[in-house]
Length: 423
Image 1 (cartoon, rainbow, N blue to C red):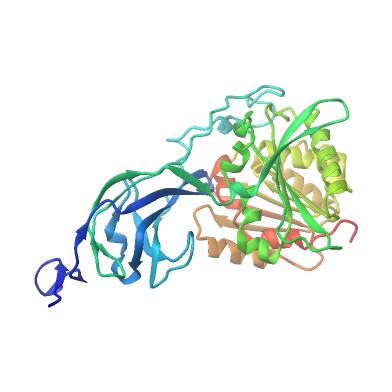
Image 2 (cartoon, rainbow, N blue to C red; image 1 turned 90 degrees about the vertical axis):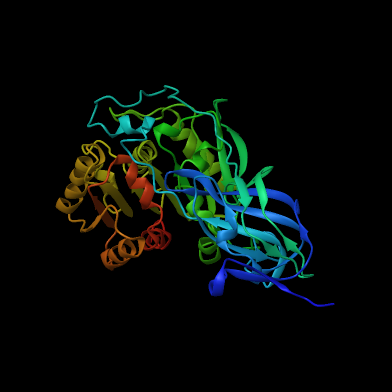
């Protein structure tokens, strides 16, 4: 039997060639959407297709697939779900170019009101905000090109197919729970427990608290809104820094722009204490972090419980500088944007007071749209022996854009994990 090759394209520059075989259609058995949490929320990041036979890796390219409204960055064959590129396999991973971060002006957000100066506007203490239902991430995809099986069969184009399920590869690592405090009041929370806990070893815990725009009865809202919780469970981070991650979900506004806070502050502390009694948590390495409302709560906690946290990562927040003297000698890394009329002047004042009290503050300024590597380089240069207060300021930027970037500053996160309470 004489074999022939079918070449796609025309002339001498044919795009690709396949061994002759029977053309077939309808050979995709499963379509799975894969989400990722970016600085501005959970979005579609990739689509995984499962075929009814092993495909040749060399026959698959990005141009073979199309996802409406998105750019396909690359497509490759894997031998197992979510695996690495392989010479053959039943799975095709179609990775998408990330979308630009949301435009602050074109995409108004409930939290934008929280950027106001002291006592002006902003969410009201105890209010339930404007919660929105979580929108499932789904995918539509079509196969435009031809791919080849290891047996030499040609699979032609596939019409638009819709995903039947979604994988949230980081969000699903958390489990959901309800804490009941001594007063009978409850607090929903998400908890990540590091894998392969070793007997006799204790691990750090990171407490992340969300912004007022994420106030919701949906327990997973804090996980999908941005990077504040999920950044600590990325495989690379967990490989080097295994830790517990706690992300409470508040269904009311717990602090306001008049620097008042509700009972949820103490309730959250009680939750951390409860978890520390149940799990192998290193009580000298408990860290708090939060954005906007969550940052304000972090500062209020540091003021009221100055010996509780080993370090704080404060993002786009503010607090009354008349009461922040207890921050002296605490380990603090603050991030704000020059375009934030609430956080920037407040943090300027707080850091100036630390300087005046004899606590040297290491400062750095970087463009809001600077490449991640440049921001990391600046943060690395800011770190100095014996310095326990850091202040990184984005030029321009805005209230919300601050946390769209801040949770990917690796040197700052590593500095935080190097801190121990009482050391």
